[in-house]
Amino acid sequence: MSGRTRTRACPERTCVGCRERAAKADLLRVVLIEGACAPDPRGTLPGRGAYVHPTPVCLDQAVRRRAFTRALRAPGALDTKALRRYVEQATVADQATR
Ligand SMILES: [Zn+2]
Image (cartoon, rainbow, N blue to C red; front, side, top):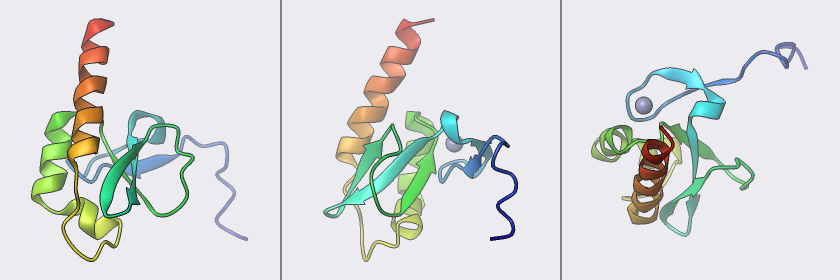
């Protein structure tokens, strides 16, 4: 089990929208559930996950480039409606707290 020595380092993931690396905590985990992209804000759902900034801009980029389809190894187009609704609500909530 080499390569597992950086357990205390801040885990980083790449946003599938803008392709920038960010702290895992700043990204929204997305999992595949029955052909749809589902938000997994607590990172507890099983299976392969993709990471995206929880913003409409990054979500749009990811959808346009079919990044979720690739990242989640999905056989075809994915339904992102639930994910979009989640991101839009998260964005509103974020703005409300400023
Ligand atoms: Zn991004």
